[in-house]
Length: 215
Image (cartoon, rainbow, N blue to C red; front, top):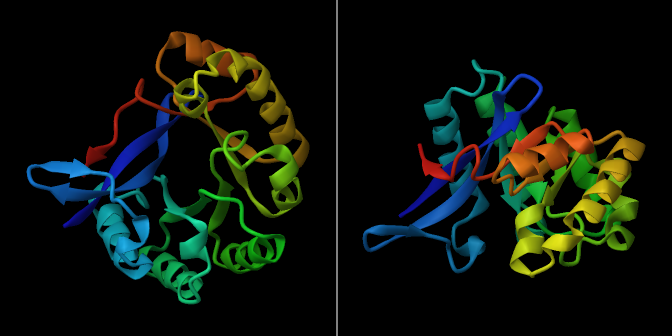
């Protein structure tokens, strides 16, 4: 059995939940764990779960957004784009964002951006600054997306926490230059909040506000 857990996203300007990232989990014995492969369940099945999650949270009435992850294998499935658009029509007027966990090619992001924006769906680049999502690799994609996410926890897990302030300053500047929203992930304490405030980042996500939980 698969379900979506949700983690709240907070706007520090008014201290309210502006959205949720949905995170796929698989039931194994008495526990919920990360799937070994996110493609083990089709995007169509995940869309059904997301529709149920939206209904449970009533995000449309609360003017909150649901953020749904896609990797490149899922992105390149010829049925994915239609599935996402059909999902948005079913949950409308609820807001939907698609988070790309890997950098696609320029033609791929151009197509997705054009089609999603026609249906008022936002496009997000996840985990900027870590893994393959370096500035050199994604610079040409930035004009076609609406938001970037910077995950402090990725640098911490790589024992590179000392790089966070410099890297965060860089990506905050990039977000401003390209007129993008920026969400800071991995916010764990008041020090992280202060760092975000220093760089003018008001959209936060992390354990300080809540761990992923079952709706």
